Image (cartoon, rainbow, N blue to C red; front, top):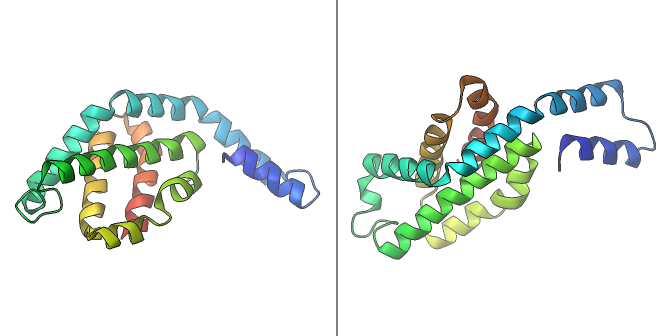
Length: 161
């Protein structure tokens, strides 16, 4: 949900009008709307490039993941890893569009730790992969866009740590 929806629902639950602070939050959200849309376009249009660069960085840092017995050793496991890169990039994009971390948590992170643990995927490796994804994505953005986008990747990194 966007900040607009959150403010409206909260005010309605409390049978009141939005406060001036809440309205200022909405104004800030709307003022950054074009920037957030531009970021989302850049990330979605460059998904393959970002995922490729991030996976190369990860496997260069952690060749053991591709080695026999590693979590991305076989072609199936490698493809699943690449799929997850795209999924985390989409989550960051959803957060940027919403201007909020809530979609990231609700859509993608709740239960993720448990799932990876049950599959035997080391969480430090997942955290490192999201860092690589962040680096690859931010490299395509302007400084202002990167500053707007980084907190969403950081949120995922912190959640998975």
